[in-house]
Amino acid sequence: MRFAPLALILGAVACLVALVASRRRSRWRGVLAAPEIPSSVDRGAFARSGIGSPEAPWLVAVLTDSACGSCDTALERLAPLAGPGVEVVEVDAARHGSLHDSYGVDAVPFTLVADHEGAVQAWILGPPTAGDVAAVRRVLATQA
Image 1 (tube, rainbow, N blue to C red):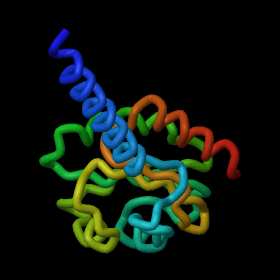
Image 2 (cartoon, one colour):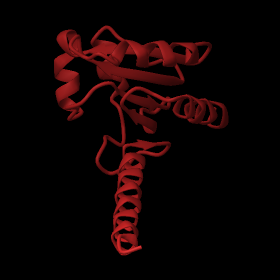
Image 3 (cartoon, rainbow, N blue to C red):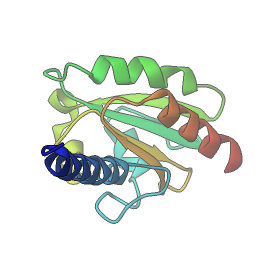
Image 4 (tube, rainbow, N blue to C red):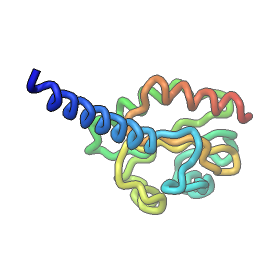
């Protein structure tokens, strides 16, 4: 009984930590672009770099690095999005480091989903979850 107040305090602290962690995680995943990430992707820059096509209505660019252990997983989960009107491309830092730099990417995998004008409509930091992929599918389906 004498440890009940301590247990109550520890439980409250644990709940607070969980709340802060969940809010922080949601800050890094989104369906709409946040101020911290590029609001538009220069689709011409991607095409001139030999990746992507400016004619595709949608571009799913997965920024990766050879030292990234979860980048292959990200690519595997996002590859099924490719199809008519949707191009999924890998943007490896070794070959396209200037693109990584120009978008301020310092952690990978980082996925940008851009519409035909280059505006970012969805983004994911880290390996995409099933929920992330479903959210991107909804964006691709609703904004033709």
